Length: 171
Ligand code: PNS
Image (cartoon, rainbow, N blue to C red; front, side, top):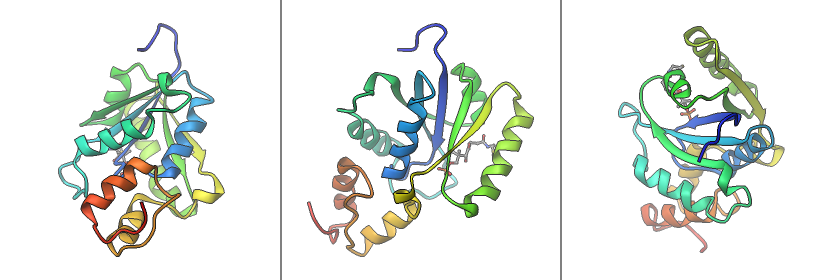
């Protein structure tokens, strides 16, 4: 539950699926904000491996025993991110930045969002070095061909991936 006066940030994304890089950004965000809303985009034009419901379920399971569980909210949205941020009274949008390659697209989105709503700030958090090479796409590719993704995504994600890719190694 959100209390009056709390600093809220939205962490939006596709999360198809959640990775340990995402978890790292969420944990960093929780050091700055009272509440972080993980917001999964409904995007019918982007082909996803998991349905939004499956993605939300994996995220919920991944944070079930998290020490900061009460500060994390999980939701989905469609339409413009800034409209969703306004509806949630969020002060900021959090985005993770891995490398220079992320910069151009992120910069464009941040400027567009600022143009659309000057009341919500985009905050970039650096991904920890050990997650710098990890993305949802690369994890899916490795899993599809049976590679081991342990330590790259939370356990509930790995379990769900095994349903899609029976070749996937390990428990
Ligand atoms: O995990 P992703 O796919 O990089 O996340 C992209 C996301 C969801 C943040 C972005 O596509 C988004 O905000 N979509 C909502 C539509 C919108 O507001 N577009 C205008 C801003 S560019």
